[in-house]
Length: 123
Image (tube, rainbow, N blue to C red):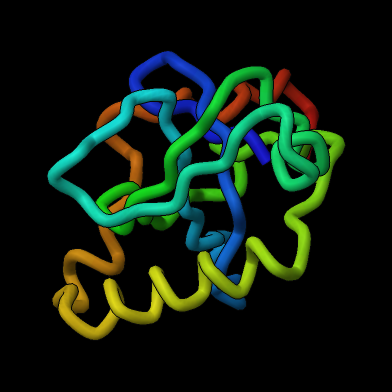
């Protein structure tokens, strides 16, 4: 999945569906190495990187956990291998234990791409 953050697409791994709210909780990746943060590095040439269709080495940090409206996410070809998803799950569960409910519900409304405009007569 790709998520638009500040006008730039970032790879994302869906970690939770929010039924009835048209949202998913996504761990967004970045190409920036942050030495002060614990995270998961996925090299683009690794099996996981190829499965995710990464074009460069990508880092996943708990601080990049976002609640995303479905209209702001674009499903791309690729999947998260089970071994990587297990690492992501441990990282996310730790983050969810310390984040307030308001922080968990934070979305990308300020910097996500807008929902597509519907033409007159479309439902």
